[in-house]
Image (tube, rainbow, N blue to C red; front, side, top):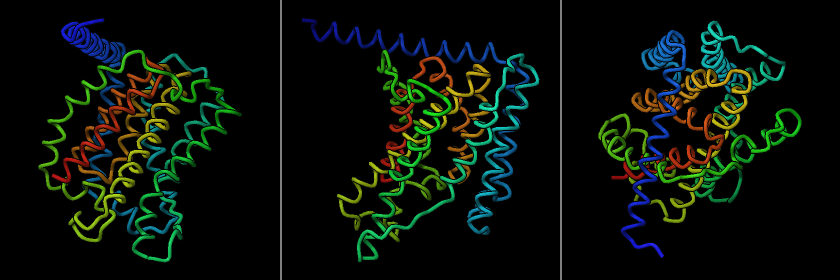
Length: 316
């Protein structure tokens, strides 16, 4: 039986080896990527972030348009966020064995997420209007996840034939360094929590109460709400890193990572500015990890951990 000191040494060794692997993935991506593509894609991402926060793009779509026009508007935004960086990258790549499935994925993915963004189905769970509203908030994300799983199951069965189910079934060889990566995010989350725009959005648990106080929310509602909120990140990782990265990389290799990171950034337009900007870099890092590991489990661990850390920070 190993002693505690030996276990500690082994754990440290695994952490450092894991971080070395991660930095190696990122260095390889940066060194092998076309520098002009990286530059112009980043400039494009910065431009759409500026347009959104300077001119209130997200607010205008959400508050001024009816549901059908919201769907059209978000589809256009998401398609541009994915498609234009793809065009930027394609001008310098020789990997072009495209197929109808490639183009179908590019045009379908923004539409699927636009539907997620816009469509709401009110539920009648109980006769108590206050409790019914709470259940609508709690059940919202799990129902979206169930719908996404159904859509991806059907797409995979008839078109993609991915045995890993878009990286969900593939296990990680070593998860230790994902925990270390999550620990390293704690100071950044605490720093972000001091900003007014962060405090205006988090914790999401405030959605259960009309006021700012969380004291009136029953413990059971808070518990199920946070579980429900967490389920949304499984859907996001499955969609962006599993479905998109692992599918589009069949044709584009690692060149698929940047356009998907811009698309991922665009879904954060309603979030604080700092979170939106960091989502672009986070999308690249998580995309690189999934590209090499072929599993979304590590990214899910980090993403879910950060989401709940932000909830806790928002409550402090």
